[in-house]
Image (cartoon, rainbow, N blue to C red; front, side, top):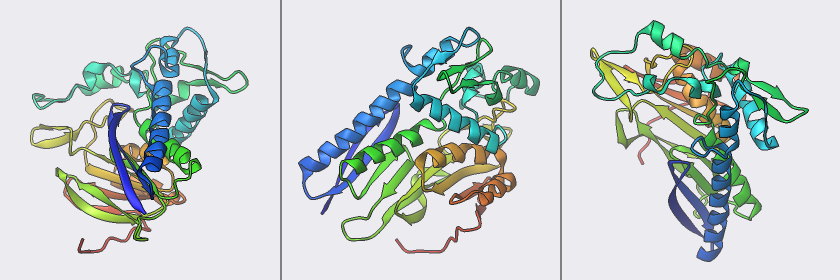
Length: 311
């Protein structure tokens, strides 16, 4: 058995598909099936096409309900449940915020005024989304409201691509969606898949290793995009409840069996902070977390045990 890999850009992100098989042609066909599934989901969820279901929902905000596929309806339903679980730290209506608030770059010397930020995020409220299961419709009741799946879409796509490839006979593989990944089966040598967690202070360095199978991993961090104001690091991650960037945590890694859940939980745990974030994770079944705070201290959920290991 051999490992076959293919990297490509999908959903605006770097994806890498890995399949274990004996024949390259067979493996390429299975990878192609996974890629086709991700492209299908992208067409469904993208905000860059006026024809996507997401775009139609947004275009009809304050106007009327939009009929959507059962798939999109279900993803919105699950997103709302995660919003409730995280007390609004995860919210797909984050797209409602004025884009000027998000443009944090290295030339920035001060944060937006807290009162202005709060006013600009007033339309962010998952509780306002009106779902009609009987009719299969979604309605955003206020003009200017927008939904977006940036916090859950990559994980969902990875999970769906895995499902397609497994149905096609792939017993071992990895779908890596820009660091949000799902792995199943074993390497040709019988070992688990070894996954690296990026160092929060250096995007090109690995902080820790995990040996996993039938598991998903997602990492959210401020190591790639942040701004320093008065010597304090502010993440590009915005708290949808305040409109201001979060502080206190450099990176969050979530481990659980499902890539959609892992993707959706990483950012809200960062927003909630070390204490509240870990309290939440410790109450969830089969969900674990590794957090690195601004002081480089490592915090883990109850069932994670870090140890030194030569790799």
